[in-house]
Image 1 (cartoon, one colour):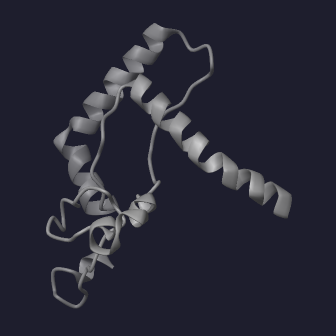
Image 2 (spheres, one colour):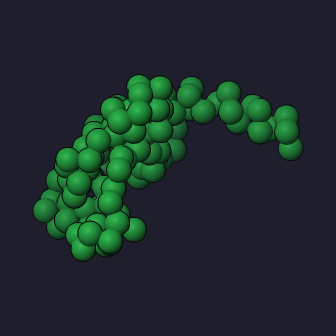
Image 3 (tube, helix red, strand yellow):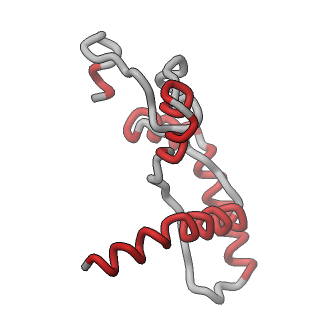
Amino acid sequence: MIPFLPGGKLRLLATTSVKPLAFAPNVRSLAVAAGPELAILDPYTFYGLVGPKNLPQPVVDMLGRALSEATRSPEIGKSYREVMYAEPVSETPAQFRAFLQRQIGEWAPYAGKLDKAA
């Protein structure tokens, strides 16, 4: 749908992202447009690298630095915005671990319901 925006064939009314999108900075989020209860609709598409539980900390740190550097590169940023319509985010390994733990806590109750329904 995004390619139709510049030609005016499609109008973006709101986004599910919490922050404004780089390619549509004046478009409000659903939480702003329709109410804060819709803030839970923040998209959950993310990319990250995980490794074995006992991966040595120096290896974790080295991979974290390399991924952070790559994520901040202009080429990667351009690719994210033009191909995936997303803003690249660079986090430390500890921040990504905390993010994953929050996601597990948030979605675990739904997984339990799905398991019972199967």
